[in-house]
Length: 166
Ligand code: HEC
Image (cartoon, rainbow, N blue to C red; front, side):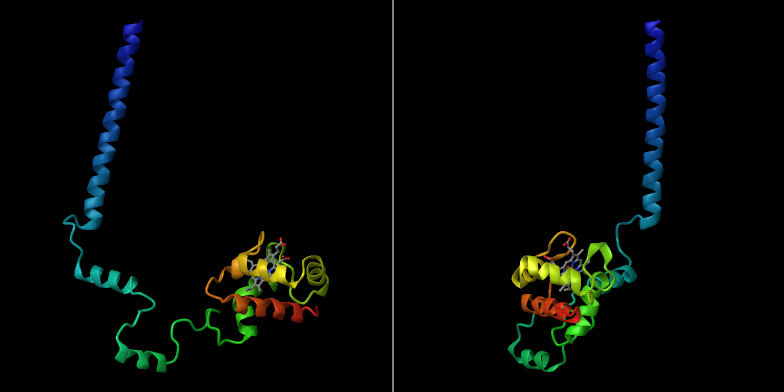
């Protein structure tokens, strides 16, 4: 009985092993087919990779070049809320409004004085600043926009309070 049992086990075991080895080879063959197999990237692919991995910004170390870079209008940061020259209202809309405009995730809504007044009375303005800058429960630090300056976030808190009539 026991020997029989062992034999059945070994047979099943080898069967399963065989299937797994088979699958491994299939995967290897599929991988070779997908990648072209020679391990070399085609020129088109290299170009695409170069395109996708272009840095957003470059550090300029050439003194002659500095003037030119400074003189050209800021590029790249426009429209995403990180641009400090954007109006407060625009930055608020781009960064804070997603939650505070709708009350999403329990965020106090801009325009509703009650909840804001309660928070202000409870904690004081400095704590509200601190929580807006460093995050607090569902409130992500700087609204998730890490490149806003601390002062900018404070201005945004003031803006929200003002818009809420607090
Ligand atoms: C992802 C959603 C989200 C975004 C974006 C967001 N907030 Fe909030 N915020 C919340 C939530 C949720 C709370 C409530 C947290 C709590 O008290 O549980 C909150 C609370 C606050 C508070 C009150 C903190 C306190 O201690 O009571 C301030 C101030 C605030 N947010 C400012 C901002 C500013 C300024 C921005 C834009 C820079 C912003 N928030 C962007 C979700 C968000």
